[in-house]
Length: 474
Ligand code: SAM
Ligand code: SF4
Image (tube, rainbow, N blue to C red; front, side, top):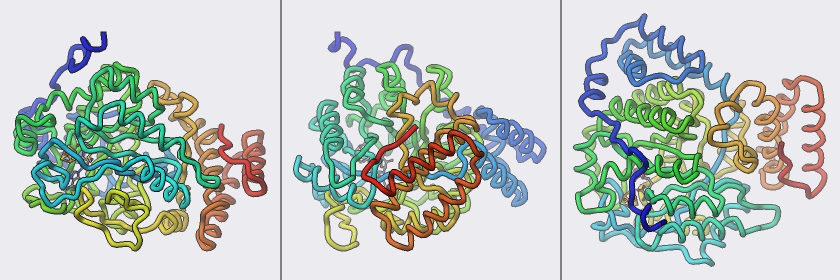
């Protein structure tokens, strides 16, 4: 049965990216202030936008209109997500790769890359190091290689969950790896993964073909585009899409992301859980063509427009970006960031801050520690959260949208964010960060209406401060 399913596309698999149509929308949609305001009004009702409506926002180029888009994105973020920012860290498991993606240091033709796959002991050491600074959520990252099949991924996930250091534990392991077949997704789901992420890299067919040589596994555009549809059909309803910005026109890619999100929503009733929008970074042994480089100004527009187009989808901003830009873009609607990240294989136990370019996939823009990032977030008035409650209580997939409503945030998200923050402050924070954190907890408590939800939360916060009780969520 499984053998029959293996290597098959999803049911009615479809290449839903029409390059000519997206190209025309990206280039020919007129800049029209009143159309922009109509689209913003629709977005503020928390309604997902079509690709045509997204194109209207992308066409806005007057500074005043762009500012209106920024303001709207800020307000929408506030009303859907509040001021929480979820934190995670990447854990690179292996850099062997059979593909030859032109932008990536792990590509097989890059002879400068030092290849390595973490063994059991090394995984243990890396996870201990991550737990010891306070991380609870990881994304495990893999090159594409026959050795990194579904069983290997599932085994890595189980190993990560088994590591306990002091009061530390990993409560959610997301995956960024190659697309699997139906049976493969079933296997990895059994290991208890969170989100399965696959980035299309570029939705533009001819650019895709140039970047991913034919004859390589990744060279098959539809196999990759269909990857998360297969995940849905195998029962993984928590998926993340993404595009690598800098390979082609950023407006086209933004439309591709929205088309992909809408396709998944139309087909499976639920859109992607997250969208990632990494910008191309320098990589060892790799010549990066800067023709389609996305400026900081356009990057900010991109984030704000994505926020408006897909209101219920989490937006992930990674440490590829420099600290100052991360700080600025956060307000436009980002809901998850990584912090204290090391992307060189084994990097969490290397001494010193220096990045080892030969062992990593690209270079990072923000190499601050988790504590430094936490302190900045707290000082800026955000509530950093390590919450993993929804996925552990089965509140993912089709449930996600109905729960992403204001009352839910007040009753569940804010309390869970605050208890995980309290854990961090009690167990891991520096003195300065602890002081900033307590201030935020007090402010957030003051905002909550009196009643049972608040009383119970105060009790949980006290138990965390005064005892060994941890992982208290609702
Ligand atoms: N090998 C798997 C794949 O390609 O899907 C999984 C992970 S890959 C290690 C993670 C992502 O890193 C890729 O999907 C790509 O978007 C991104 N990436 C690769 N090279 C990059 C670079 N030079 N700068 C920024 N991001 C890069
Ligand atoms: Fe391999 Fe992924 Fe890098 Fe492509 S992006 S070379 S598939 S690790």
